[in-house]
Image (cartoon, rainbow, N blue to C red; front, side, top):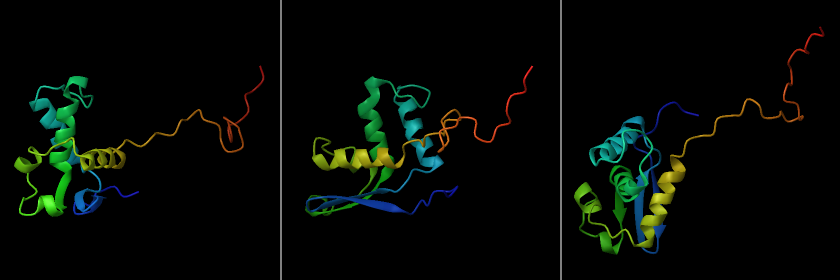
Length: 132
């Protein structure tokens, strides 16, 4: 797994004749910008966002992850913050976009050190306990 995010990589999400391009993965800087935006809006000082701020969190994710769009309803409208803030988030494509951003940036699960090995052992390779 690479240690650095390709900040130019983008992923298309298409619904009907509209396509929205998002960052393929948030870099540390983009992730911090989303968190800073939430703190500036008064929704917590940690990565945990208060439930009352979920709409703001979703908007912050879109502002910092949507990089381009195309389709008949986007013609002549530049993909920039002020236009992202004007979006009708009830349109189904934005649910797809938000879900994809979430999937691509979900934390990886840490391996459980107590989980059994493929042979079923939880102590595979460990030295046997000495008898007293």
